[in-house]
Image (cartoon, rainbow, N blue to C red; front, side):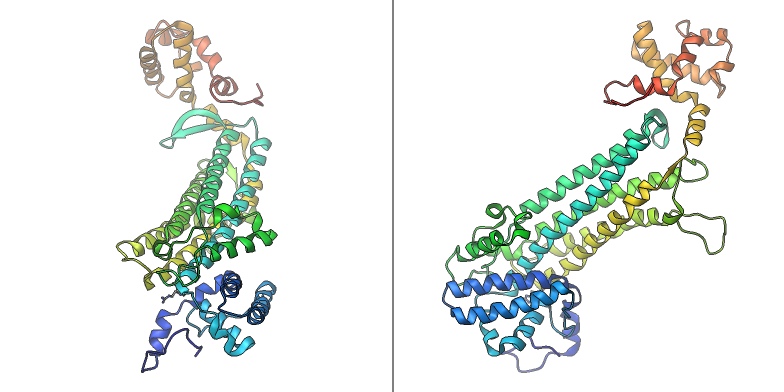
Length: 459
Ligand code: ARG
């Protein structure tokens, strides 16, 4: 059993079941890199404030660098019997520097340590997600250009509404992702690093030394310079709210839920459009799955999982919100449970964003099937007829709406071409069969909606 960071006041050994129950190393080992980094900064603070000598600081620093290298090389092995990653790293340092390690935890608590680690982790993970969002945005934009000019039925209530460009449609998902990126960026920017809160009440080290040390470190490390606006990334000295705050976890989980919800809507549209009933699009074989029983099946499992994972993403958000509700200040062990949902949501979103770009790029759009669906439904031009009556015949909107409604009813599903001119005139003498037939042109219909900018629309 690994050593603990506490124990002096206890007469009995901890019950193994309690150790197993309270341990977080299984998941917080993800924070190893950031924990070592926090300790490097902490050592320089201890040196500046006279808690360790320059020589001692050097020894600790070297040992921390050694662990840091192991992490970078992927050979760091967490001890699964340690209580958490903070304990594990302390134990590993002891092997390197012996009893000197006993000075390392001077003026710090795992309560502020865990926050520092978590905030650093979030800053980098947010950056990764933003990069993946941008990859997907590029794939969508590529598809917009490639399929520019294809016209599809636009839907409201999943019923034919008005004709739109496929590229405008795909572009709307790109716009959602642009909002997601902004949202993630804003959350990332608002996360302020801090150390020196101690367990809850501050530490006997002058305010500011800590923040200076963090700033110095961030400025030195080029890798961090692009992630942190140093001035804005470091918090002024506070303690009670700092160790109690998990708002940033909730904000991230919420932003990831919104992003996941966007992806699920894209997934759902593609699932519907790839059915036999629609046949608008076909998934590439490499991005579809089969059935163990029905040999003909080609299933959109990837898209279904993207749709399904929204349950886990939303659940993760709910779980942290609920865990924090009514929690008295300051740190309570409940807060350890913010990590599995946070790590889980990042993992899900990153996996979704990795698989989607190629899936989008390899889709085969079936223009013939789309055109046939449009041809089949002349009622999709009903709004165009209304605008025609308003603009060319100077009829008030409501009257025009009513006339076209009656025309649709009268047609009883027949084509306008198959209706007698007289029949049409009977609905309203303002209706002219030839004019109506002329309006039923998909390109004209889309181009008439001039409030939307479409530079490349071919007519
Ligand atoms: N593993 C703990 C967590 O993630 C570290 C903090 C423990 N602090 C304490 N006072 N027991 O929250």
